[in-house]
Length: 72
Image 1: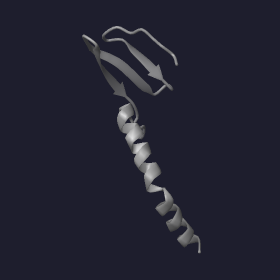
Image 2: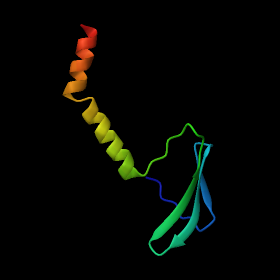
Image 3: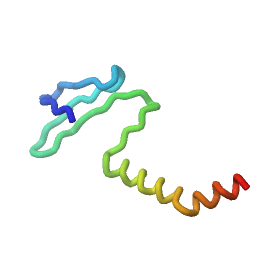
């Protein structure tokens, strides 16, 4: 993991096309702004993990049975 120190109003750039800016610092919370192409999905980590879990459940045993039935 890369750890960087930024102050309010400062940014960092990821992959030449994603800019992350520190907008506000209030106590132990930081508000950030993310500027990225529309085709780049951006999720809070807890939402991302929930999506992954639901996707795994969706392709569970029932998903495999459906795929097998399609191949038969």
